[in-house]
Image (cartoon, rainbow, N blue to C red; front, side, top):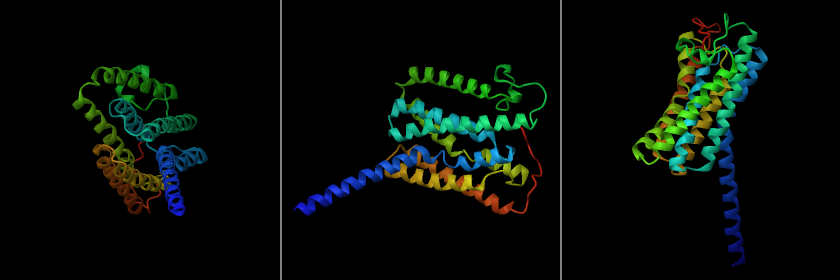
Length: 248
């Protein structure tokens, strides 16, 4: 009898450890793929192969997810993951802007958010402009969410766009690679970690019965990751971009 009780207690303990490990993986797993890309940019002092639109995609997606949490109250690790991811994206932006300024890639007068020039949207030459834009987005989003919380259809739409935009995370990088006919400057390890992390995340959504929007868009995200890996194979002999677009 005692052995049976001990066995049940051990299983419960191991289950708690497994749940805790899965939660930590969810929180920090999304940020890990950007470590090799960050280190590569810092080492080479070349931010040319990484699209800052990836950062915009994730910042908007995770901001919407945070706002959606006030309606849905989904699992806390998913909320914390969004906060961690936003911080990671700001680190990536800061590095890329610094490197591009040092390399004189961004020439002419400074372009800042307060110019309100749509031609230079998300191509600003100072880090503060990216912060200013996101602060404005958070403020507007918070005000709208406060007044629209009672409206189920609206908040469900916010939840859908939160995960759909994140699912399209790889699209800017895919398009950049396609235009350049090269993956030069893009960290392959980053994309591999994207793929593994997105597979784990999608499985986590399914097992933990997350809202349907989460796992459906997670499957789309994995598909896009695999498409980028296919580009690595297709363009493996192209070491020089054919049509480098330095603005994004």
